[in-house]
Each structure stands twice: as structure tokens, then as C-alpha cells.
Amino acid sequence: VKEIAVLAQQLPKEGKARTVVFTQGSEKTWVATPEGVTGYDVTKVENIVDSNGAGDAFVGGFLAQLVAGKDMETCVQTGHKSAGKIIQVAGCQFEGKFE
View 1 (cartoon, helix red, strand yellow):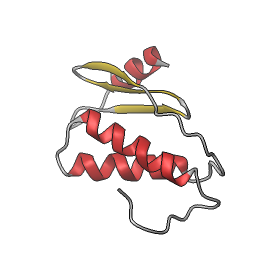
View 2: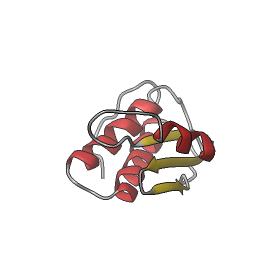
View 3: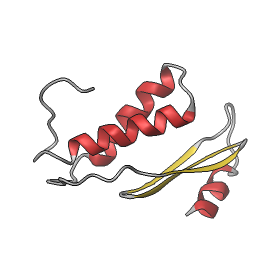
């Protein structure tokens, strides 16, 4: 997957440089940028109830940090945390405060 992320990042694109993010559930998340490729470990979640919405939750957490100007590691960690929370409940809803 790491090599595929690098190849995808290198595809032609007009304008701003491409960033590629590959998630793989509980396996490492790969991020490829023009500066290189980095793998990020996923924190293990013990109480998995429903994986629906995990990808959307990851993207929401990731993009919230990206638009706030945070570094890539913070973006990925927040994405992992968001996905980790949503898979511990049935359905795609989260009640309460996210910390």
C-alpha cells in the first residue's frame, strides 16, 4: 500500500500538490506528499460495535485539523481518534462531547 500511495501522489495534477491518504482499518494509515511517504500506526480499539461511518469520521477529524493548519501527524491522529469513537457505537451517531 505504501508504494501505491507514492504512485498515486505522483499522478499529474494542476495547482496545489497532491496529498494521498490511505486508511486500512486497524492497519497502518499511509500519507504520501511531495515531501515523502509516512506510515501512522492506528490505536487499537477494544470495543468495536459497528464499523459503519468509520471512514467518514476519519475524514471529518482529519480535514478539521488540516483546515486549521495543523501538521499531518495531528491530522491523522485526530482522524484515527474520530473513527475510533464512532466504531464503538451502533449506527453513525455520536452523543456527548468529543474529547
